[in-house]
Length: 479
Image (tube, rainbow, N blue to C red):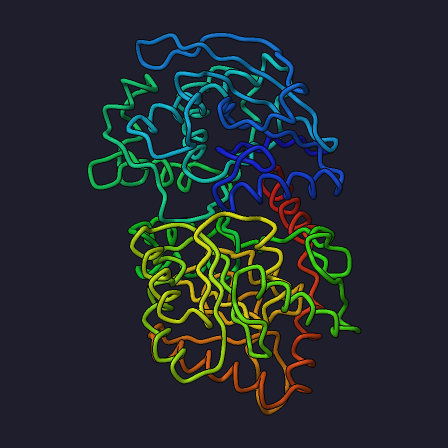
């Protein structure tokens, strides 16, 4: 049986900033259910660690990791949750902070984290067949195994998989870190190795040195091999396309189930959608909008340009003037975008509700109570919200990129086929046109709308299929 160590900078339910945290919870669980022996290693961000899990944490051992000329304390803690073993790497100089990322010494923090992972394997007596790495925070490990820890005989059979969740974040640092942090030579500092415009690029290192690389949707794996989406690494990815694949993320089909969701006012199924109207009315009341029989368009998102929120703002004014519709936005992000949505709420108090906050329960209510779910992302490696919305019979309206293209079938007005609405041209005019088309279908053809809802609720977006594909990647590199 394959032994896997899954390494990430964050994992729900302990801490998450986005999709990486969700995947780091769900994928290991799905692999475990598929009979893969798997454990997870993450940092121990003590200030952020949830109180309800603290009494389950146990100290295993501690040692020092040489970070350049500094001998740094490394504590290994562990806990078991839902049958899965987690290792927590403790150093409060690096991880005892109020946030996960965004510090001047992130390069040193995650250099330590990666060396600590390598140096703990023998000590905890868990040497995996496969080290499954995620994003730049762990992407330098394949280099370390070859250049720093090559002398450890037990490590020589370890294979590495790097999953890229977002190409924008790469971990780029001055090459002095090769000596000042890692204490390795410069033999890999070249264009075929880790060099990137005179800097060291952790993500590029992983792409070149890992045994397999994947992204979190098939379309994104193709897109990042182009200059438009490759973030200046498209050439490196094309050179490594033989080991590059795309595996679609999943969602928890039990958690996101309108038939059992305790956050809802009324539960419903694809066969009986009538109670969904009660969830819509409750949502309107919760966000302070009139309880009116008009189409409700929901947004649950980081308020950033990557998520297309600037495009939505540019399309919104003319749309609201022309349509009897309501728009509900939930999320935080760029202060300028937050403020712009709040201005719209003041200008259109009966049509716009801007909820500038993080609220898990309200998010569930938006997935269930909205009619249309807006997701006009400029790019989207995977996307989870569109799958969650479909699960609730709320039709997604998406820019057809990345995982959005892989999961949403655009409505065909001639055949009635589809699970949502999609557009290619990334302009406010086209987005406004698609929003208008969706609203018109809702108001003018309830039968076609109900059929679309039922079609959207049918696909199985569970993690089991994804886990099977990851197992195939493991087997391929091991053989």
